[in-house]
Image (cartoon, rainbow over all chains, first blue to last red; front, side, top):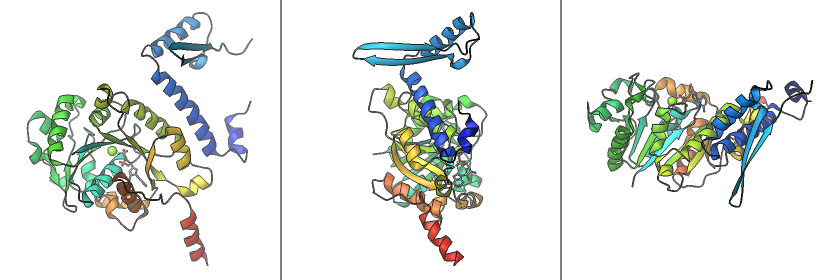
Length: 85
Length: 269
Ligand SMILES: Nc1ncnc2c1ncn2[C@@H]1O[C@H](COP(=O)(O)OP(=O)(O)O)[C@@H](O)[C@H]1O
Ligand SMILES: [Mg+2]
């Protein structure tokens, strides 16, 4: 995996490009949580708590993504448990 | 008809007060009767940028509480015709800006002024929400920097959900992007997000790009809105922004290093 310092060292990946890529990710994530129903942050928090009863995971272990297809809403939940021992 | 315009950003120190002073002064210079209102309760500094700090007698909160009337609190600008300043209160009571109070004052201002420019405090708390709540239009001030762009995006979310227009189901208020403290030099070197980068991420219309400029500090030292420094790059950029705000189509300047290159070559030769 490429570390953040490799980005700064490589000649073509300027720090402005790194900034833009980071922003695109952050903003996309925040927008999708904003557009969702009010209970999403609470649901996210409780899911994390439940998972942590069994596995130690970081705050970004649970990724939620709300999509609508026609008049159907789909909440996609991705749980990453981290490296296998 | 009167328009309430909020100058907002989320993040602090990006140039909201500098912009409020410049845009309000520019609009007044164009003959529009304008009031500029400091919403930064407890951290009043619009009066310092406008150079009228010694003439503050009553403030926004005094008017809300009925300790003074609007006429007593408004300061008439000494340099620019058609321009009035309503200073913020220095009270530490953050609850002083009640929604009813703010509405009453803005309504009264609307009877007399064409433009009401609201200088928002930083953050997304009460003061910032109150500055934005009654707005008809927003100018989002952003520095080409990760945290500032992120906060601007949050503020855009707030503008589209937590304003009176949003709550009453009207069309969302138009939001314009103003990028400040821009350094074409650093953008060229790949050290700073470009105008296109920021605009692509926030995807709102571009009102202007204000370069990083020493003229801004000089102006604030003197207590004079930088737009009055007509020789300066920042002053000219603000002037362009005001013209665009009023519907004029003007090309963006100060976004490439080209001009500097020519001067550089001249002086080196
Ligand atoms: N275009 C600019 N170039 C250089 N300095 C600037 C520019 N715009 C703002 N500043 C400086 O940035 C600081 C914050 O500006 P201010 O307008 O008070 O921001 P805010 O109201 O968002 O907190 C001030 O010291 C100001 O002089
Ligand atoms: Mg300010």
